[in-house]
Image (cartoon, rainbow, N blue to C red; front, side, top):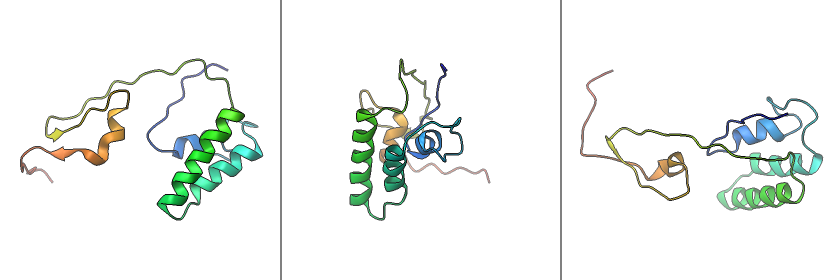
Length: 111
């Protein structure tokens, strides 16, 4: 199957697609090793544990990829000028969301 998979800056969609019990897994994709790695990420209780689990997930998927990845599309993003948005070369602008700062002290009058 060739398809363009929507992904994002979180591991939620990755979990839903590649975990054998994931909500958008088309059936029988994944393995117990990938499931265990994804579950370690999902149930991490600290930042340190989460970072280690993500590192492990990356290692597991490099060693035994759940699919053949032929290409990765690029997405266009637009952000209002009401925010100062830092650009990090090679990263999706949404990955820098935590660094965005409002420009000035403009407040919306809309409810």
